Length: 490
Image (cartoon, rainbow, N blue to C red; front, side, top):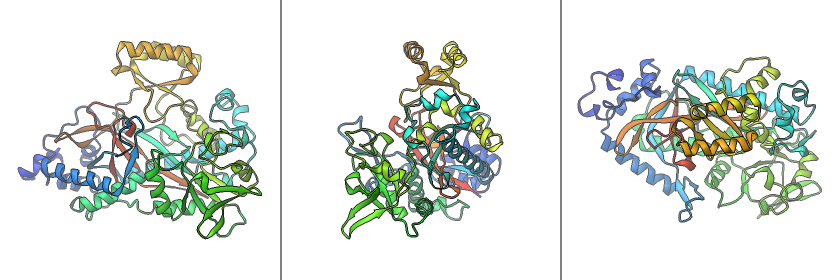
């Protein structure tokens, strides 16, 4: 690695990357240096100015700072620990400006198609009538909400905040692993990771052409205000959180602060005359836009779960009357269903008459005869995923599974094929990562965040998640993954 970036590096400064070996995997930093991407070679040179011990010492200090700042998430499986920090790796992941230009266009294309798809399935259902997407896959989906039929949303924007999970395979091309259209999380770590790098590693960051991520809050506020009922000139926006015990509560606080909007819980709101009001120390104030971080089922006990203590009674009625806008809209979960995902290239073609800029990972739908047969015949070669799970739960990676695990998933797929999809195992790209006193390759993915009001803006870089365990492909924080700062280098 060092010889690719700067052959004249001194012996001491070669300690960090001189022995780094990415094996047969596509390495983000190595390839960027080979391509002489702006800033990448200089980053490698600066990294080579550290010893492993020096980097580890600064990394430990950065982890302590995250805890002091309260940059945490909740792990419910650890009963004796409510909060923990998301492990942070101090070696940034780089994306060239040219690569980012394509990803930016691809994410915007996908978000536009998703919003058109949602407007259609909750309206005329043309795509279903034309047989492009099977009707049962949509109307029978557990995330389909009939209550949203014919409810118009401002600017046709159902998905205001979107997270698109991207992976890069051995051929170096990015592809979409899945969409997150309901309440995507993780953007707070994007911004906090950058601020932490600027404070803890100014000698790495200084004067490099890194695109800023600091204006996310301003962009979010502007988009939310654009979605207010049309006659409102000064809309009031609130972020609705389930409360302190939610795993992403830190992010709720962070986003409310960054966007300059009010953080509320269900008990702070009530509906009267089909309008939403919040209780404040200054008296009652009407709320026009709600950025909700609560699942559909808990939003309104009159319509969904009658036992919900998290939502607001009468909220759907206020929505139907056009007196409040929800971001994201109710029922967006249909669009990020793992089975519907397989049809996204066709959805893009149908609505936009364009080929997908970023390809899907090939996907076999077990609810269809051909997909089920192929999956069962190639189980040991595929990654099998339950369509209703997130966070890495329930995934079986065939090439790494035991015979017992393969037999178990075979029985589950046979019993309820519609609950599963399968994909070939992508050889995820790697990035140099500081682990256990050495720098080694660890697999990464990328989640760019898009905000849509009247139009769409994509946060440059997004969240890089890293599988900290050697050989692991699971990057989710709930499964032991961490994060990196993502640098889009112009």
